[in-house]
Length: 245
Image (cartoon, rainbow, N blue to C red; front, top):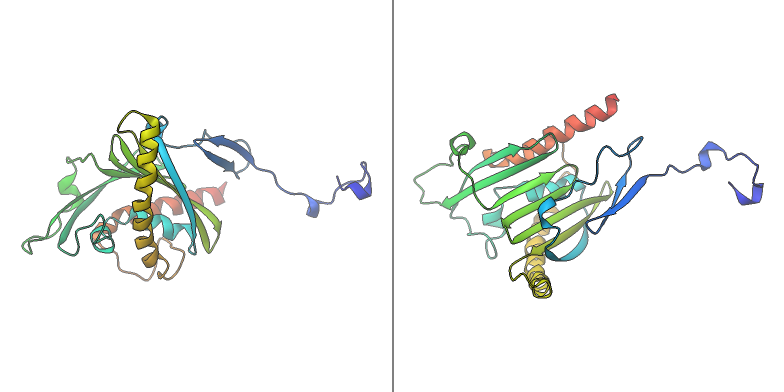
């Protein structure tokens, strides 16, 4: 209704605004912008609901695909984070191994070792039967988790603002003392370090061209880029399925 036109006056189509289904879950507002009813409940991580966490957010001037791919990049860690969580340029990156769980979620494992200059990276097929407690998980369209241990996790939501800006919500989850107040304090202090790590990433990501990625681009990829390749291929498939509906 347009009040000044009266309650019985029809509303022209160009004045109508499309509404979207929303719900609140895990401290996020989830928005369903597809047609009809949501296909499923919000797909977050099931085993961290009772953990204490601290969160911060910031906007990066990139398309959300670039922000996501930074966290899928198994190769950059030893080098970009050389003075924090990496080991500098003396690291050999084996794999990674990517394991799909359904059509919209995958895990990936990385097996790094000291580079003694006598070896080349082992291929993913050589590592198929090896697992690590430390692994990363991605859920379409934009949710990521670093599974550091059963009691320590880092999660991120990469929320598009527009084609050139992405809001990143980063959370540090802790369950170490079983006393939630103390775990909350640990998470708060830990996120100071996580912010430093994220800003090391940001310095690199903001310089990448183009700001949006696609399946085929004028770039050279290596074996360690397998999670990125899997993300791009599946994202393209999902978008193609949507356009054919």
